[in-house]
Amino acid sequence: MASSAPRYARAFAEVAESARLDTTAAQQQMRDFAETLAGSIELREVLETPSIEMSAKLKVLDTIAGRIGMLAQVRNLIAVIIEHRRLSELDEIVSEYKQVVDERAGATEARITSARPLNAEDRAQLEAQIAKLAGARVRANYSEDTTLLGGAVVEIGSTVYDGSVRAQLQQLKQRLVNA
Image 1 (cartoon, rainbow, N blue to C red):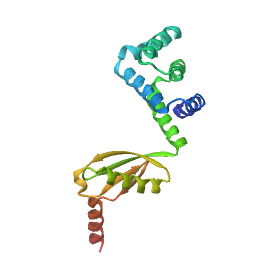
Image 2: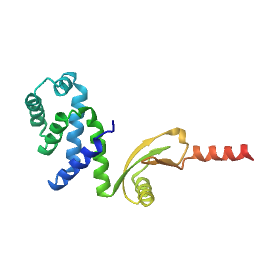
Image 3: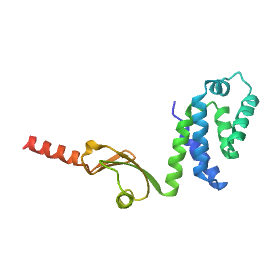
Image 4: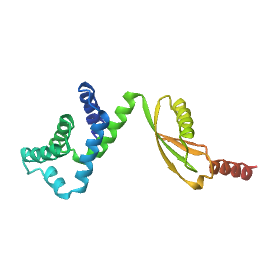
């Protein structure tokens, strides 16, 4: 059975856009609820058990929504997900929604792994180059890996650009072996 997460994500993106919601806040509230759900066996049992009345499930949801100040639209999305028995897809829906929002904003996420910490100037230059490469604004997540020796590895979606010294040495080694 194919996942319905993309449909829910696109539908929620339409609702969020028409209501002019703060997409960052909506994403965070969805993630917070997903984390709460993942951390509570009792909550999952209540919300996923078919024999429990929907009205009781909504009371539980409304209590949680009230405590965390959840946007009404986020609450309604979660209510629909509960009603359609799709809670197991919540993490995927949140992820898909993030992608839809990024796509509409003309942004992309890049994972950058460098051999050493990068200063603000280096980050800005690297992000500008990646934005040209991706043809979109870039939201970068940085990490470090000293085994790279130097340079950086950039991942944009499923594409990897490996400009590390380690990769260059491996390519040189391969050329020498083949020669």
